[in-house]
Image (cartoon, rainbow, N blue to C red; front, side, top):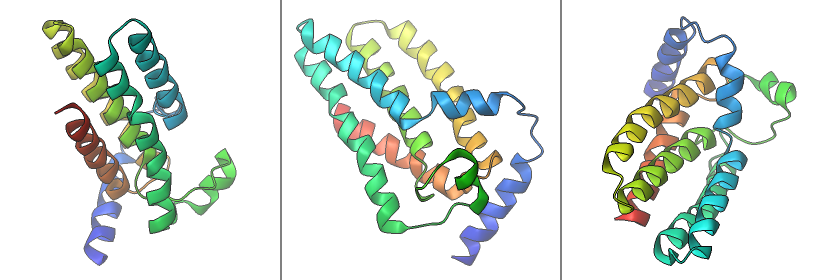
Length: 169
């Protein structure tokens, strides 16, 4: 555990040197699991209603998986880096894993998968590149504002990749 703490502290010190400014607020909103669950619900439901059952239901199945991240947080019970952060933004959840990192990874994989299934391969590649940066910024800004440790974010990304692989393989 000590080596993870050293890693988290090292990453935090490096991230604090980045000039994020107002992008922090934007990334917190767009990466919020509730926002992403809503986006997945609308996309999945529209596909199901337009007779794209398989892809629509595979997208909708991601929503309960987003909720399962909260269960992992409760089981692990890792306190957030800045205890006062909870009071600032009314967060009463634990830190591990990052729901924002997980949700943006799942959304990225879902969009890339959906575009590929509809034959829009060039658009899927462009989406992959742009969503890589969105996912990266969302994760790093979670460390920047002391909502998460870097290891929380890495776990969120890893679990998101795992969920996408398991659902869409």
